[in-house]
Amino acid sequence: MSRVFTDYISSLPADSDEPVSYPPPEVLERLAKILGAQMRRRGLWRQPPRFLGERFEAYASWDDDGAFDDLLWDCLLAVVFDPRYLRSLKPRADEAGGNVDGMIPRNVGHFLTGRQQEHDRCGRAAFVNLRRAAEIATAEGRLRALVDDDRRIHTETLLVLPDADASDTPEKLPDDAVRAWCADLVARLWKVRRSVQRELAARFDRLVEGGAVVRFGNLASPVTAAARRHCESMLDPELDEAWGQHAVRSRPDGVAALDKAVLRAIAVLDKPAKTRTRLERIWRRYVELVEQDPPAGDGGKRAPWKPPSGNTVRESLPVPVPKSTFKDDLILLQAIVRQIHQDPADDTSAALPGR
Image (cartoon, rainbow, N blue to C red; front, side, top):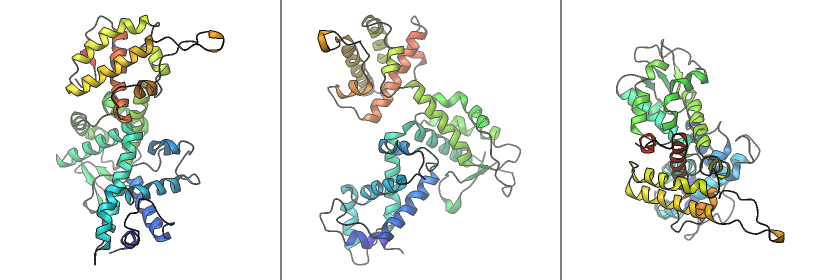
């Protein structure tokens, strides 16, 4: 068994929290192989680097000079030097006959999952929903997945109907056909949901028909892209334009007119009490910021009024809310506000996500 990581970690000082010298080439080469393989299995290699962190926005692809090297260094710091891991890795590496190399791929998986949850929640949720749907369809005998080494379904996994000839060359389905296949579910793909997974599982035979052999990644790419576009259409990260169009018709009367309707809709949401409380807190803080006068500029003139950005609202909350949770909350609030504007007299709770 390989001891590349074991020997490296064993050589580190006991109190290390960062590399004391540049790691040996074999360590980085082995880590690069693991990281690259997992990225390809998740369909991340062909996605924009920004989906794994804001610092990668300058890169167009992972083939750009320096892009993968930067991610590799982030990965090394996370999977080896994160105190949560190093506390368990170091003692095992120091033991006589100890070996921690088998633990590194698991840590790399956690690293990528964490990055996706922070920077690409919609895309990751859609991917997980689709993969679990394929697993359900396989377990129920609706579909056959040709999985190597009994591992879970990934982008290179081939999918066929139970009685189809799996020796055929995989067919590349048109992206438009895949999007049409799940178009009615796109609005629900942005969160991992068992109900969505079961609906997708029940319709695989419509897509993989006529004995076609389909690569899972061929399905995942257009589905995750559609989920991302849906989320982006619902939420501008800064909210200037989005809130300006949907939450503020005039200032401050636009928000004042909405206030009671939004609070009523939040109160009847089919969500845990702490979620409803958090949504109410975010909305009330937004209203407070909208009602504030803009600061006076040069010459004492008031600056043109603009709705507060999402970052401004989040940073001014009395109780901190994680960035990823805040984004999900804003998507819910946007849905509430849009429904109210579509039909002010309607009972908005019936059309809200999560009901």
